[in-house]
Image 1 (cartoon, rainbow, N blue to C red):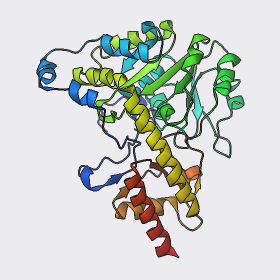
Image 2 (image 1 turned 90 degrees about the vertical axis):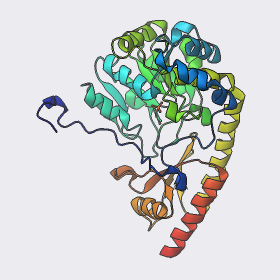
Image 3 (image 1 turned 135 degrees about the vertical axis):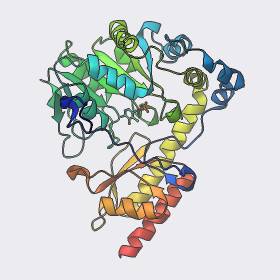
Image 4 (image 1 turned 30 degrees about the horizontal axis):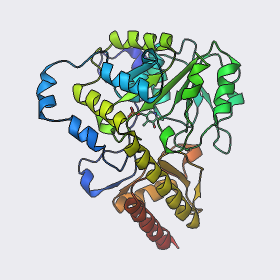
Length: 355
Ligand SMILES: *Cc1c(COP(=O)(O)O)cnc(C)c1O
């Protein structure tokens, strides 16, 4: 730490992303919830030498084509959509500008929420998940600050029904509810239809998981025109060209190939169910994940950290946290059937070596 850093940030603990090994080719990489399938042909075609040549020009600060395509895709007005540099940037703008009192979110959820709260000086009101790892909407009833819920939640994969989100929204219409739908396409229920009825709802989403574009860095916000105007004000005060030309093209093209991505998500959901079942037959406990990952509690006698390391020795990366409540658990991204077979094979080996 230099002597120039703001004292307020001395204690800031940065977010730790999942490992991104440089020699990615050799690994079975099931640790950061990337999509195992490539982007659609339309995306490949949209990025060509002509477009690379145009990189000398700034990108469209209004992201007009992409936002137009998103408004069609979600059947919303153009004034209700915003595109950001990953949903991380969108979430950052929310913490920066839309958490006037505090931010309430679960103790086990996306690891960036507490980091952004700290970075932007927002009081974090952390609400423990119930003992079955579910979110209880009643626990948020009297929270005055902005509520932030990932639905499905990470790393549990559990989903709240729309009726529960609606209860959260109607409990206090002067309180903003942010629903992070990063994993919605893999079996969750989107609350986009609730935007018609509630102007205190802000949905955050990403192209990283279900649109196979993690490396392009593209996320979005869907909300009331007033809230989207607020987010735009922040963006234009921070980084007007927040999206590069190639990402704008990739995102627009991806929305045109919706059928392809629906297919990928369905395959991932089927693989998830098959691999979860196999893990349960080996003694693991799994949640009812509606996301592109499996949240698995190790059988008695196998520590979560131990399992993580034993898999790593065998060239397989999963995610493990040294957090007391979930120390015996790992989060396993759902890859291709072949990748999951490799995981299951290695897991059998690890269990047999211990027996
Ligand atoms: C992956 C993830 C994000 C971040 O997505 P990017 O668009 O890649 O920044 C946001 N929220 C949750 C819950 C996630 O898991």
